[in-house]
Length: 114
Image (tube, rainbow, N blue to C red; front, side, top):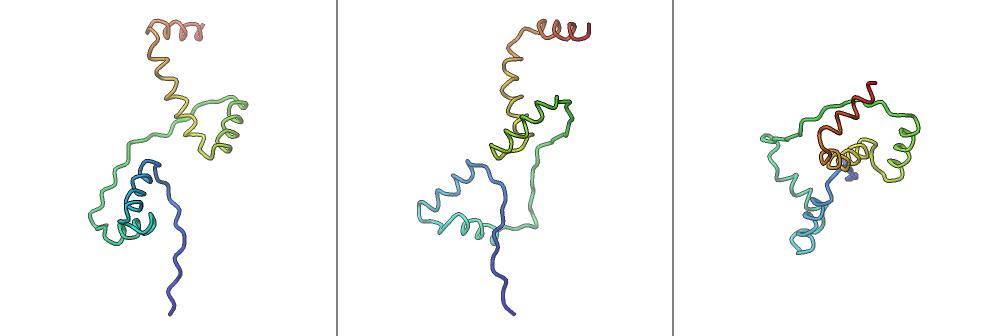
């Protein structure tokens, strides 16, 4: 019985972590990043694996159709998700919002209710 050939296995990895994996390759300690990953998997004790996932929630936000379409186009062109774009926008906006005096935010809410 012939062994099956190895197939590519895609998975996501942070750029900084990939840079860290490239260091042993540059130093001649590993043949390639793929070889390093295969060796790590062969030596890992999966019986004691502990995977930490940050707590996440899924929320819904009403978006105007034009903004939704813009998000789709940008996500496609940047090869990312709409969720990543939303998180990036909110993370960039929060410091501006937090720098405002608290009263300004309350006034805006009152105007919207009126």
